[in-house]
Length: 564
Ligand SMILES: NC(=O)C1=CN([C@@H]2O[C@H](COP(=O)(O)OP(=O)(O)OC[C@H]3O[C@@H](n4cnc5c(N)ncnc54)[C@H](O)[C@@H]3O)[C@@H](O)[C@H]2O)C=CC1
Ligand SMILES: Nc1nc(O)c(N)c(N[C@@H]2O[C@H](COP(=O)(O)O)[C@@H](O)[C@H]2O)n1
Image (tube, rainbow, N blue to C red):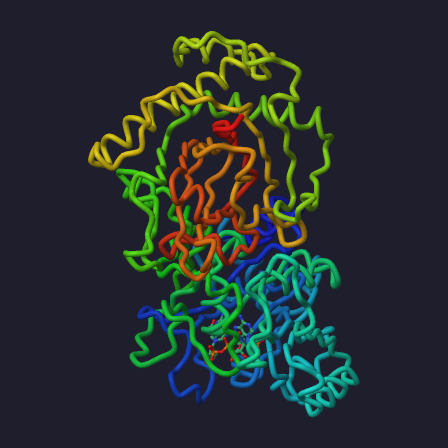
């Protein structure tokens, strides 16, 4: 049996430092995957008593419970805890522990559950245009409901009046229309369609729930649009999923999860829910039988970086040109991506060393904005500022030497100089080898000649959260300061890099930079395209796969300008 209390407590602890609540998606479906009848005539009763008891135990242990406007209108739910169901759950659990088989004759009156504390969660409704009725049960029960909407008060005075009426009924109404989160660069009003700017951005909504309403755990019940919106955000915003599967075939019904997120005038097109991958993998699933139902509890995993990596056998497979016409694409040897360039043990030692060095040089706090506004949430240093000369002899430094130098996890400056020389020498070797593979020797840039590298630049981006975003805006590296070649070693996290033509940013494409890779830019990718590590999480997408980005350190090496 799933111990919901333990599950929620454990997972709450895991996310306690995030700026959002724990998110548990919980719903009941038929064996053929339906959560409702397609006529939406009335709610479909799927769960049996035992699995309902689990749902109510979960409600009792979460600070808030969320449904969409569709469910609020169709089901008129209470979203409260039924004490009898909680008692039944506790009884069954005890029963199981004692390995007794009979589940009959359960008395669920107040007398045999003296320790039962019932805490109703706060109902939360995502309702962009305030469709909810004042007479709705969840309003009238007065368990401090919160309704998130998104409308322009100037354009919709009728909705302002509805908001006031709801507030008189003790509903907290939060209009997300005016909430313009810093990171959501895509979330700009669209002059063609003013209502499209009124998106309820789910990460922003979660942030408000935690910061303003102190909600540390949220149960998401449905319906279909809500479930699809949350699941499309993947591991960043869903911690656990608990699905009750009832022995029923519905036929034409409403599917819990749709690979096409529904759109309607009410459904915002700019929501980050457009971060979308069709397949949601459930990780570490646990199956239990509750009466006649099966309950699956699992973590959600949607970022398929491993399969993206496995599928990408050569550099070009880490580049997605699907959004740019062939004639506008750069040449295949102008952007190279070499996965697994840095061995795992070297990577770990380097991350420790760089983290240590950057903290000593810049302190514990990240810079919010670079002087030119390009970088957000970062620490940086040039290796020339580290107080050592990279005076390591030119002859190739082997990986074994580097490993020896890095044995102490925080290596000294001589060891770091060796590492930098190894990165430079290996980069030269890789560039030469890859370009020979990729190009006819006639059109390949001359890569065999010795490159005069400038001191490396180390850049750390913090792990982005809603409140503390990070990224590098679109830019072309300084044309007067650097030469024609840029190479970067990526440590700490996978990332998506986006490229856009300088003169026409609509001509753009993206690349996946897997952790421990080397990437190399030259030719038009160096001079004619801007590149960025997007701040906006909606753009952390490669070939339709959402790529989670954590704390990331890059070691950038650039050759010197020909005039220097
Ligand atoms: N079996 C179960 O466990 C459950 C079944 N249901 C069923 O689901 C059905 C309702 O599903 P739907 O029609 O899809 O309604 P829904 O409850 O998902 O609400 C859809 C509405 O919510 C709002 N919405 C959804 N995502 C949003 C977003 N990202 N930002 C802003 N607003 C958003 C929009 O106004 C949209 O029209 C009903 O039949 C209900 O009985 C609902 C909950 C649980
Ligand atoms: N767990 C579960 N099993 C079913 O069979 C269901 N139909 C639902 N529906 C959800 O429960 C809400 C109604 O419950 P209350 O009125 O609050 O008791 C309904 O709106 C769905 O969210 N759930």
